Image (cartoon, rainbow, N blue to C red; front, side, top):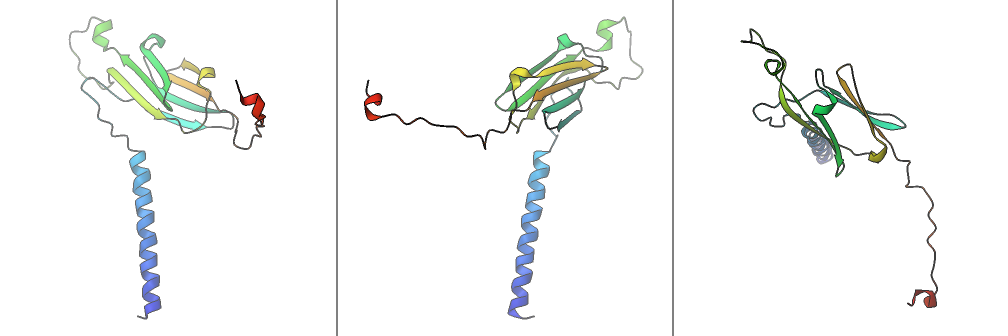
Length: 156
C-alpha cells in the first residue's frame, strides 16, 4: 500500500467517524426515555411544521380541557395533564385488566422555530389535543433603518 492510498483510507475513516458521531448526536436528541415517576405516563406526540404554523398533536383520549395545561416558556412547549383512574369515577370493585395509563404526565417539546405564542390556539377534539403555533415571518432579510443622531441631539 502506498503512502497516498494510506492517507485516503485514514481520511475515509475520519469521515465515517464524524458521520457516526453525528448520527448518535441526533438519536440522543430524539431520545424519549425521559424517566417517568410512579403514577405518571407519557402520551404520544406528533410535531410538524407548515408554511404558516407549527402543529403539535397529543394523544389525550378521555381527558377533559380542565385537566390539561399548556405553557410556552423559554423556547419550550410544556404540556401537562392528569387522567383519573376509572375506579374514581365509577363504583368498581376490582380490575380484571387495566392497560390504559392514568395519573399525571408532562411533555416538554423544544421549539426551534420563531413562533408567536400569544396567537397560539389549542383544541381538544376526538381524543386529540391539537396545538397550532403561528410562525413569525422571517426577519433576517428585513431592512431596518437605524437613525443617525447628531452630536447635539445626543446631549441631554
